[in-house]
Length: 446
Image (cartoon, rainbow, N blue to C red; front, side, top):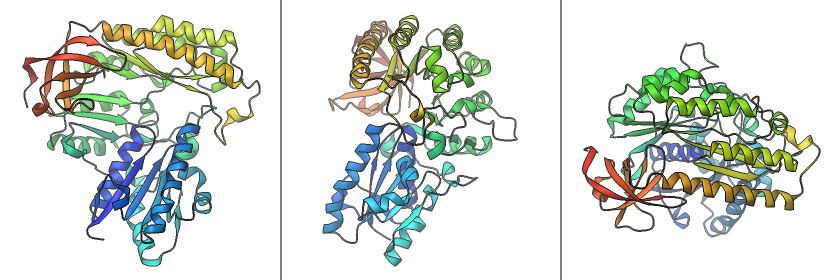
């Protein structure tokens, strides 16, 4: 397999991005190098997402576009993985004759063997079986280009069965990694100069519940906080019902835990939350937000909101707006409800007209934009600790990085300090980023 090129096209969340990096790490060991040009590739992998209909449609369209490359290069191997591949399996081979390989969310570690089988036989393979032990969770993948932040998967799957969500069906039931294995991986990342780790899972708050060892998520965060070289800890995603008092106290007690939490609320209506099977109510959610802000006044709270869920009336929507006005999220990712095959919500009545859904979404997003800008403007004139990630996308002469509260900051100079913690005074605030001025004093010299 020596000297071959791998191209990976990724859709979806941070977990998908990390899994693409794991695929690249595996194939590097098998003689492949990663390329950003699909026309040069010997192996193309499309890593898909099916949480929302739009993401699934984009992945399907992208797969279709690779048909012409396969026609021009019959030796090209085209594979598809991720949640959409897990969901459709054999159907993908029928829909896309140029596909050679379909692999599921539990089969990443088997990709090198599957590729060798395709090369040796020319046959087409599907591997979407769920496994009790997901070997791929522990594949060590170092970030490319000296990036100072790395993802670490701590668990996969979900036992919550929210009525709108396909995750339990395409990722399987909750599986947590052993605490010691996670700590060993993070120590290896620290030894390579990684300053920040982002802990990943469909519901990180429920980490450890499926294991016999006594290590819950708060214990894990506390132990990671003692690892030399790791200066920042982040995690995503959290379920409000599993946000414990012990984890909330970590925001006060664990110095390296960043002042940011993504806590999806989905709706501000108790009726809709029950229909969603979220297992918490509006007041419980708001109480947890109050506890978070009491433990860590500087904390940045972001969220997810679904608009137009079946049965959502004007009053239900107004309750969501009222909750947003009371909490004032730093940011919120909002989406029109879209039906996903196999979920309980498909059977619910009282569907909301698409025009009404769009009107509500526009109103909600406009409100959130005002809140986000207000939050960002409170930082003008203040100094923020920023981890420099590299040059800014919009100006190669500027550096970019993130505050501990997960806000993007662009500023002149400092590109040579990539991976360093620096002090930046915020000069201006926009909807999606901050503008700063680099201080001469480094927070933590490299």
